[in-house]
Image (tube, rainbow over the protein chains, first blue to last red):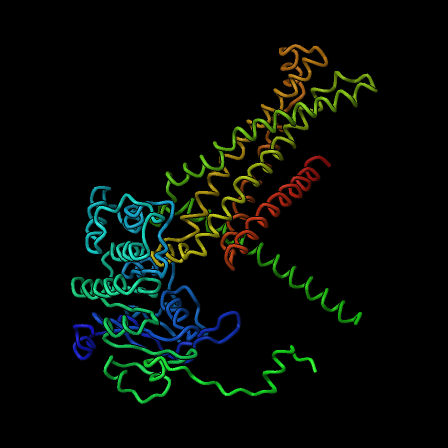
Length: 274
Length: 267
């Protein structure tokens, strides 16, 4: 479990505030009435099964998907009405580590990590190189800056993406499925890395994942999503002690028996023919 | 049954039309945003990088030189051969140079350049942006506060706007060389005479017409290819479709625009 207790971190103005958020995807509702807050220094894990809406929620938080209802505030600013310049200022305070890394294949690891510095600062190339090496050192990738993304393993890709997310010294970092596709040892290393970086940089972290073990290890609080709605938000202990059946099924990985209507089943099989 | 078929047809037609309008709108938005970043990016402290532009100029321009040179040379030679064959019946071979030189500078130089660049770079641009879209690299740019249009599209647009007229000059010149070779072989025309006839036949307006067209073709290739790349979805198959669509649309747009241009400039 995360070293910082939930009571200790829930202080100050929330860095992320979501109010009654709704979202649709190609006309189909995927999120409904989502409200949550992430406080400074907190690690909030958004958890849920496949199709629960957690990736759409993350895209709404990042301003990549326009919600159909409700609002998202980042650092106290409602993101729905932001202009280009305001977005740029806000984005400099955030970092995102995507599931597949999303490193630019035409650039080396070092160039990838330097990119935000090159685009947003007027630092000289040597300073940028030193800063990017510091971040690569932080994620245990020092000495690999000359490699191309195609030459990295899955775990290294995610760490390089993390270094790029951290290079502007953000106050808030988002992780999309950090341990997906990694073996248990590498996944555990990455969890440790997230905790270490939170401690070292005093940042807030939002992690979207479906990995229970990882969530329990790093989370201060966990929000559980199911079918586009929040089932509960609470600490790891509160989650374990929850009596909500769907939360318990998620924790114990219990198969949920679906009642079968034989006539509807037959109709589906025959495509509605008599 | 007949009514349902008609209804399905009109629905499909309506969807296609709406899709076309949407594509046009997306292209117009890309053009506006790219021009904004090219002209005002520095003022917004988000400049379009010269290094990126030079890299694109290499890709879309310099590397296309051999193909364009060969095709334009062959085209000039073919037009000269056809011209001689046709004009011989009327005993008017002396008019060959004037006719072919005008056609090449007004039409075929720009057209060949446009088609080659559309086939080479139109597909490459759509594939590159489409892949970046699918691997979340475009999203990564957005969340880093870097406009994907400024970073990806503006350098391509600027490079094509600069390189297309230059490549057209090359295509015109190579077509003339092709024509000069055939004129020398078939009509025993000396090089000095050939140059003199070209000089007399062409007006600055002929050359400018071709260059203006090639500039427009460059803009169209950049926008159509980038737009198709950004809209690529559904994995490898979708990427292939976007790439093919990009090339087909680019070539169709070039030929139709060329025809419209010619209609208004000649008639």
